[in-house]
Image 1 (cartoon, rainbow, N blue to C red):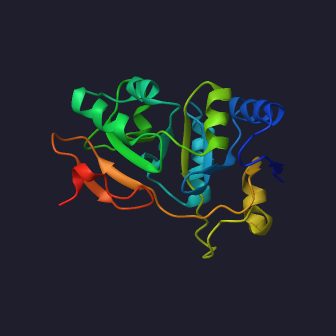
Image 2: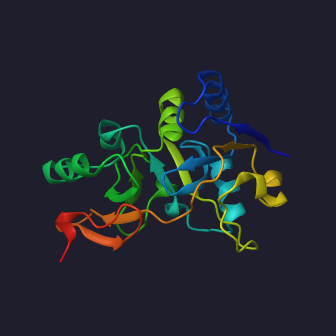
Length: 208
């Protein structure tokens, strides 16, 4: 069964942040709060944890994972950026926007979208998630918390089905957290393309 840690939603306790970072480093699969709801998460290098997340979601497409980064400089380690990329990302981070970018060699091949060799990246705004990433001192892989056999939104940890507790190692709870998709922008071509409108809205640069 998983351990549930209740973290203050605005001022996360340092002791608990250290405990969460240690769990990530040890290869645990976590449920974390994000700007767009609760998500499954693990450390970037952990094949076993990634496989567990895919099993929970029944997802055989690992490139559906998003890399959560501390800031723009960390994104540049994992994605190839030129000046237009920098300007756009600087204007729209942090927040509930996922950017699909061409990956660098720092990203494991198993996570890449095969045709474009791309990966989704995000700089989250949620204070607890930002604090976790900074305490862990490395980006974190995430995927939406989806259970194929459970139709209700996963917004309140107290009411998560037993399946969650049986399949993850730790649940980081900040109480109720609305679940909604992030805005997704494909930046792998010269012209940036809005793939999905979500919580981040439509950046003015992409409006018709």
